[in-house]
Length: 366
Image (cartoon, rainbow, N blue to C red):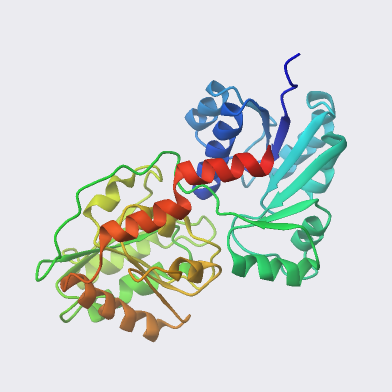
């Protein structure tokens, strides 16, 4: 008699970006291993095509009628509370919860009596006493993306069963590519990827760029900013106005939203900058290093883990002056051929590549 397929329920809001990449890839890996996978979310801003891709892979997707991430969240949760007891059977073997929120506590009812509940906050460790910490402490296992964040989880929730494993940063293996010769004296192509929010400091980077990039070894250098506004605090049009007023169109370009799966943008990038003061383990840095593109970032969240045995990236204290100094140091290394893109790509793929992580996640959950 064939073994019964493991039933996995994935719970958490479906946000675009890193969450979309990780949940999509995790669902595919589990389905390929023979598991029955259900994704249940009370909030989603995924495009319809992304949800259809999940269904095409054999994943059951359960959403309320009202799924907008913002204005209709209360209606969506109310509908989920009323209808999911009839739509979801209480026979799941594993409940995998991503993101914070007390909804995960309620979702435990869909496990059978011997089922296992796994909690995974993709961005940062919970604060002691917070709702996130209360949710995490009730789980059978907690997943953290780095050792640093794991230590903070334990500080917040106390002794617990915890596993350190990075999340999926891309849906497909990063292809081998030819690496450009050292930039020497040509224009350096520098990029910021991510949401346009205050704590990531893209506004500071744009407004200070003419000062940061006014001399060799960084100059001549162009800054490309890829990312969408955060609805609560839009800054894109303001920054575009600043670039026009200052006549910086040849030095700075703000491209707006981009396709997170389009890694070809990194083909024309020499250096990625992330002056963010609050992070977990940023998706953009994992994508960059797999593509052989070095970065300079501030030491937020678990970013320092990307320094391990890796001489081709720089992580600075959370200080703008130190960050600028590191950008100039990295520019010098780039122009002198001291950054080995092939070495960087091999290092990243051995730790964060799709093939490696597929094995680890499959073993963990199944």
